[in-house]
Length: 322
Image (cartoon, rainbow, N blue to C red; front, top):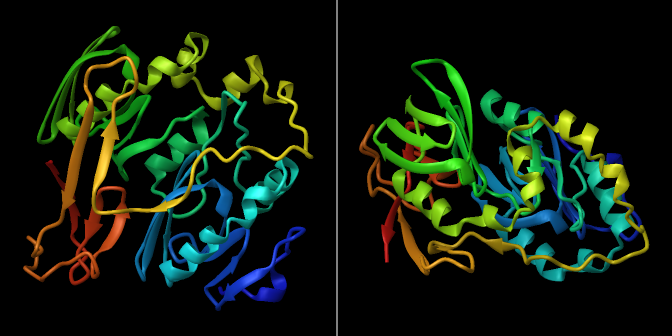
């Protein structure tokens, strides 16, 4: 059930920084016991882009997905210190790939146009099906999601219709108009008009993704991959054709940051949308049990969902335009 330090196989140059029965933190990795899956989750530090830590839960936004962990978590100060060392920034591509293989996470190289999603950690069957079936495209990130209903990335929308009991995949470059109100989404795409009932993305979230138009930077030959399963893409365009020199030191593509209270969505070049600044707010009291809530007491269950510590009721973050 717990992690033993002598059972952890260290990579060359890796050394332990902190260790308890529930986690091991090194200069290269975080190995955390996950109560959700009852297993160890190993996460290389060099793939972390953003993170949110509470005493009982954590959300790590990595290069190719989101990793959720629940249980007795490593303190945020220790993660911040390990990321501040940046000892992983000088390791070679071969060492990075070895760390990913030891962690059970796909190795992402900057020259690869696609790969697999990372789906380690605690996920619901709906999101696990998406991560294990479909391919991750270069620079694709999860914008927001609801565990059993939808996943909205900067390229596509994976949506479950609660009334028809069907799952839809909408590439955002094929979407012409959309209207989201309450539990209903009306969407017009190049393939037809759709009306979906259930938990759907908010109008402002869809608008923010639309304004960014990140899909304009994808090679037009790869756009059809958004609706293809990984097995089919790998058959027609195998990753083996991309040779990676193990001795090369990859360039750092980003710097890991801790989630702040203020967030921003920036439109890509070539659009006139400018910059949309939004500030997230949480409720002062739970609407279910009336218990007081604050940023220090709530548990995060997603990028914009949190639950009450007293009764476990889930709430959505309210974004206020600045």
